[in-house]
Image (cartoon, rainbow, N blue to C red; front, side, top):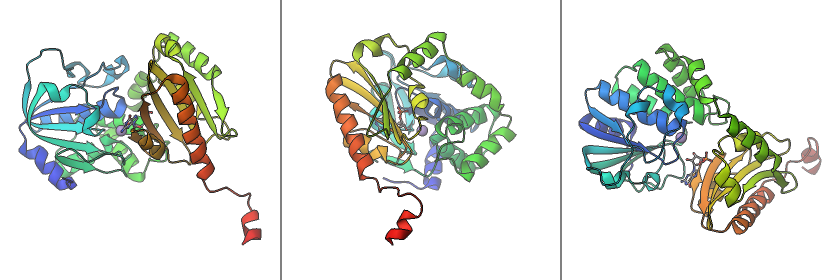
Length: 330
Ligand code: 5GP
Ligand code: MN
């Protein structure tokens, strides 16, 4: 059932014990919106915990509450709660969290246009740059103050999902929300400096990966394709796509990594093509300009499949005519 913002706020108000979770492979928005909501609910006198079924990258230690994030463990006691809140994903990418929780109701809050809406209660706003921006809206609706702790976490979600306020999803509302977080005591540089830290080896790996980049679709697309052996020896592929999307003339950037014999992960970024449609066609999802999917295919086959889908999408784009030409034709 689709909820309005005020119905969503009401559900949170009614619940006393709340478990918060987000997608596997969590990044700034998943972690920031989860911890942000946790701080807000605790400030309202509720019992709120964050459970994420993955390891949390150490760069997020800058966020208050990093140390209390739980991870479902084998044979652990189930956590009883009134409400399970799933953030920044539909309920399909939260790992073992449903197995270790015993909840009365499930509330899904997300900003992905591809959200399947299968949760019992869903609030999706795809005009928001980050799920953290929806948490900001909810706090306003609830009429409670932002602590500095909550603000640090919400700011991190806003900043990371909007590429530090540079991507096309950045709106005046995003920046107003960020400004208000700064007024609540957020130190922007503390967050950006912590998040841009990389181990030496990751920087070396990025150089190697960038060296492997291949252009296709007449230079309108670029990709890094990592076979299983290469993927296995690389510590992190975070940042690879950002390094190649800047190439002149490129609309779509893709990183494909083979994780198993017949399992490849794909990340895409674009300037014009709707990559969420491409991701959806392979069972994934995301946003118009940033999306991903998992292909149950061997490396070579997956590479071929994703490249031809991208080429086809680029070919289907309306041709940009040089200025003046369109007038001639008219
Ligand atoms: P990334 O390339 O950073 O992993 O993901 C880009 C965007 O697409 C993110 O908003 C992410 O949540 C979404 N996304 C990535 N992979 C998947 C997937 O397999 N399924 C769905 N539904 N969304 C995905
Ligand atoms: Mn997000």
